[in-house]
Length: 363
Image 1 (cartoon, helix red, strand yellow):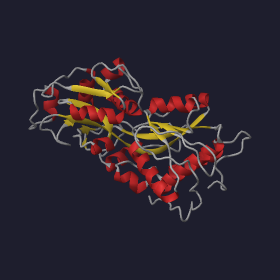
Image 2: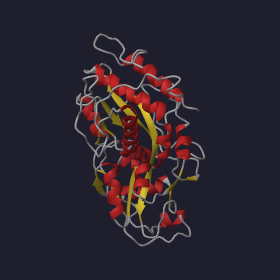
Image 3: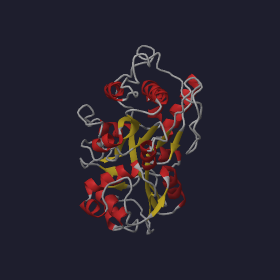
Image 4: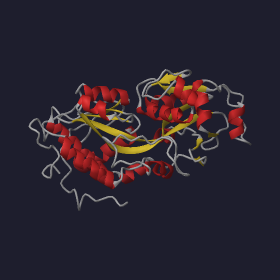
């Protein structure tokens, strides 16, 4: 679907957001010169590469910048609940009851894929194939060597070394972990019963690392390692990824097309509070560990000006960020979903007197 252009629909949405670059994993809070409001965000590392790219482009276009702390979904949820940031970001959508209890709303900002990455001698990207059960058995500790019969059966003709498998997982609360463990729970009864799906789990084996960055770095320097990261991190760190066998029994590679195939099954319109999980979707071309990354905001923000500034940035990204997202192998949010999101902004994000923060005048 063709993205609506800001010149025809949203020419006046570019607002004043605080001056700060989105760099590294954290940044100090800054104030918006025009609005006199602080705007800050914190949370998921999964979308950090695209948020950084959007922020750079937004600065070049408007002179305004965005602060975002890439600290993991768990940290983002804690910070938005404690009202220390204007918005939180999480790859684990909050259930409607939890949102209501915390006075929050959520909406999808971007979609992408989580991929298994490996550091195995002689194995290049896409040369190794895994299915869900085998992947779960590796991370639960049932398979401990790369030349195990279960892996060899899936990879005839591939020279698999007699090397011990070193599992690397997230040590922090992580939406990436939620997506990964949610998938493993769907494909492995053993995993579902003994480990389960959450942003943080009791890992049976392996070493922990903080953030997608930490997992990528640990896999890169550990011979025999396997971990899981958002696809952009695999590309940026030149890490070999494994292909996966999806629900339809087809072997697929992580690409924007396979992420889109999985995302096409999402029923955003009929979801409650945009609560949608995209793992293990049907379809021959669907990548099985696909997910959305969400923004969390208070329904009645303590600083309405900062909240409005944040919404202007998000609206700009929806309108102008598709190509940048695709370059980093993310899936943009479809136009019809953007319409639903902005309707929600107008209806549910309000000032202390109940007046909507996102209005025609604000746009």
